[in-house]
Image 1 (cartoon, rainbow, N blue to C red):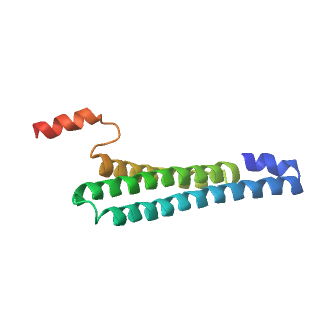
Image 2: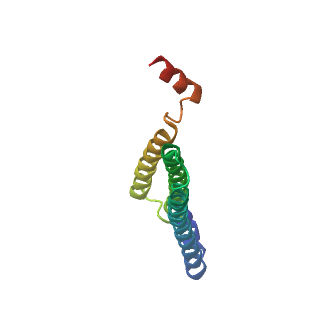
Length: 137
């Protein structure tokens, strides 16, 4: 859609706009990778520095999992944004939209799995409901 509109503007201007859109999508993907890698180093470094000082390694491990999970969730959301920009702006074909839908579906499942791992409940469950179920069971 945007591709057709920009392409009709003229060969030189249209190509430059499409290149900038591609660069923007690439920059967003790089940002996501930097966030994920940086957060991994930060979380593991924080864990390694604090582990010898804290006797409660279980709590420290839970904090590590939460930090890593949040970083991965943020990175996945940013990657989805880059995919949407690239697909909608540059390759608006039925096949590319279907691939985008599949990628979003997989990343949504990963996000839910990470949320369950970090919080011990599905995203649509309230925190109180999970606590009640644990007390009953």
